[in-house]
Length: 248
Image (cartoon, rainbow, N blue to C red):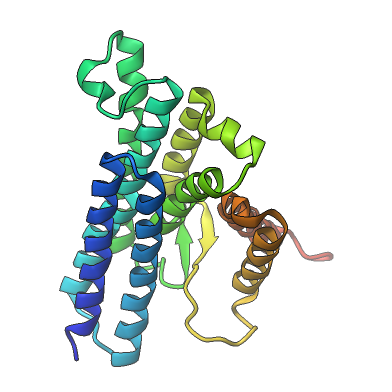
């Protein structure tokens, strides 16, 4: 029983690897769904570890290794494919790219797995990030990317298509997502330790707003989930730091 969480973590890693294979073959949609499967396994490994009380240093390290593949490398390859497409280049453009600027643009997604690795390394040695995070969690980074891919693939949203087809927008998104993974801004954990409302207010608000976005905008609403998460996290931070009337 104690090996069940590690087995589920391995499924996370396997999903991330297969996602990369699909992305390298140009199937962005399938790659995105596989990253989503990796997220489900990432949730389930922690849930099973808590239920079975099967914690181990090996499981902690394996989880981080799986996360950097599924939520750092895999979404970065999706970004690379979008950049190549926006430049009207084939997926193997990096091998035959002409001009230093084009090469730099195509290589820019490398910042994402680097920052994801730094984020995970910090998380593993920071005992204060048990019930909350400092910086954007790596699964949230991946969800921000696949939200755009899924929105572009399964909707006719002009806004999303303009974003995924713009080199400038993709560069900004890549840099912003990467940097907020390592900037130590407090953000609430996406994982439920219990189902009571108290202590889970932000999570339930995010869930309700995300469902509303999907109902109103269809799958294009997936692109709004992480912006909503960031807004709710910053709103919670503002409320905590706001001085109470009459206090000094």
